[in-house]
Image (cartoon, rainbow over all chains, first blue to last red; front, side, top):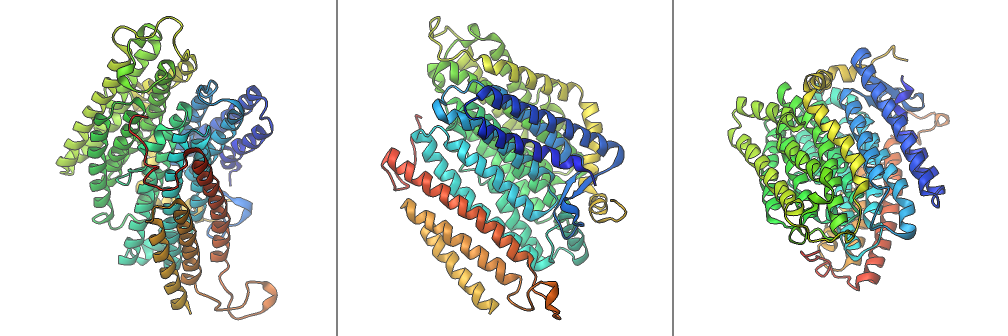
Length: 496
Length: 112
């Protein structure tokens, strides 16, 4: 038992509720939110540290023992992802301090909702119960529905209706899949499920149910079923979009990673082959989308889809090397997507439009933003010493060793295309003679500098210190490959 | 009895799918409502209907009903109730702002 596990969920939740009552005082809201997130950051770091030295940390909520009550489990995977998510939330909160398009009373609810979204994301990472995962998914999604509609422009309302409908339907399918799973195995605890799947053997029924789960999580993660994503990701204010791009799809990816390593790992010929195929198609279509648009928001949104495909390629191959690569790339993607969306948002705010042909020469106005944008584009393309390199090398090496040549080639080509699409944004918006006269800028873009620098340092650190990072990722991948340690620490006796 | 309920859930799912595929926003919202009801009925039925006493210690019965599916359904009902309220408000507000209730008109333009 370790009560630290509740901190990354409970602290932002309390802060979010406090912030609702402080709605007339945005400065205090920001302070409360940042304080709670720093607390959650410390807790997540402590959890990662304890994982390294003392193994997996477990909390049986209310003292109900494992298969009966709800269990929170922090293995290294969950701890590191919570750590990354909290850092991103801090950066987005700092960036949202100056939310240009949100005026009046809408602004008062921005911080509480962003905190609630973080609560849902952290909960999804930490929970060890599949129905509780559904509940935390809903917490995340409900916060995102309101964030998407907050501001109430025509475009936001229109996109949020589609987004809410898609997610309501996929949540219903989630409940149906949970019902099937419960009727087949009679438990909802993930460790217990893993044990029973291994005992009973993963027969046709269970594989079918696992594919149903794959469809649900693929919809949430924008894997192949991504048609809903570009619209909603280009409607809300930049700080909200950055939070969405960094965290929302990643929760779906995490759920796939957890389900198909812990429970349904016995029939990779069906499930994992499907994942690799879906990943390959997602990469290709994402790349086509990224080059075919001329609005900054759309280009960035299609880049989110592209990287989801690449991570799923790594998860689908499921050996030690590829899982390490996929996990490192997942963390890198959380950081860099937030980074590039914050910078892109600043560009749009300064120019007052997101159409590339109407923006020019911003490098003279805010040089640090321009160079950071170039660095972020290079990180996403996987140029060493930035953070994308390690993950890409490991995944592609695995791909070549396992003979998945076509998918590996698609992975390489599409990362080049992603780089091209981002360079198009860089060249289009920062190069050339400026179209804006002195004092004509719509916004200073000042609020993007601090979070941009934090994320830049993080990306450089992840890249240069990749030896150190891999040392911390190793126990995470170990648990993913050998679920017995996870099962032992959740169901095992003698632990308090 | 379970078979009957499963068939009922199937019928609700098909009607829900039909309504989701229509163009009127209000019909689509009702469709999602039918979907969630169907999934709750299914969750209830696959776990077995009334095959023992109520799960209370004082009942002194041979068999007890599994209370977990009911707890799950209750949680899911609460979530879906709030979601339905949210999407009704969103739909109403969208209708007020744009004047459209047909999904074809809510498609959006490229130049935004």
